Amino acid sequence: MGTKAATKDQGLIGLPYRYRCLNIHPYGRLSLKSQELTAIFLGTRLYCSFVMEYDVHTLLDLATLATTIWVIYMMRFNLKSSYMREKDNVPIHYVVIPCALLSLVVHPTTHHHIINRILWAFCVYMEAVSVLPQLRVMQNTKIVEPFTAHYVFALGVARFLSCAHWILQVLDTRGGLLTALGYGLWPPIVLLSEIVQTFILADFCYYYVQSVMGGQLVLRLPSGVV
Image: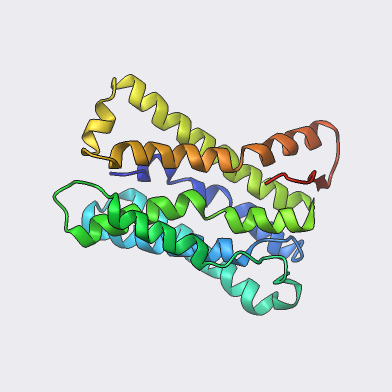
């Protein structure tokens, strides 16, 4: 249901890079708020998975949530002195509240309890925009260390593949996938969320590839990027 099958690897794919950022480059400019938003949508999705469709993806979400909580703990306590709080300045409620309001209006039309359907929609919307604080940190600093750049680029690749998966599935089923998701605004909004996730990171990935091809170890972002 929703986007789980297509996005189950997005959290796991960034774990090695988050580990490297924290253990080798603790000043790696990770956004604590992005990690907290990730924990929120993973926790919500984990609950929905348990009550709606328990499967192997539930275990993957559990592993990703556990490591995300570990990253948050490290940033809040062990590496507190290197956390750039003044650069990580996107208020979390600016992201959470719009997602919550949208989930009240547009959510799956399945047989599950209404609260569970709203929570599922909430985690889909949150996942789409959880990277925004991380992009804001990079926009504020303009200079991105290699491991942070690798981490965000890995997220971009994962989200591009997820979006491509959805589009190919829709084409392969001749729209049948959207019908299977229900009716009303939910099916197109799910697909739109996948597209939003991809394009949020598109310009960063472009400059990342340019930087790598140019042999630059440190990524310098032009004004206006992300």
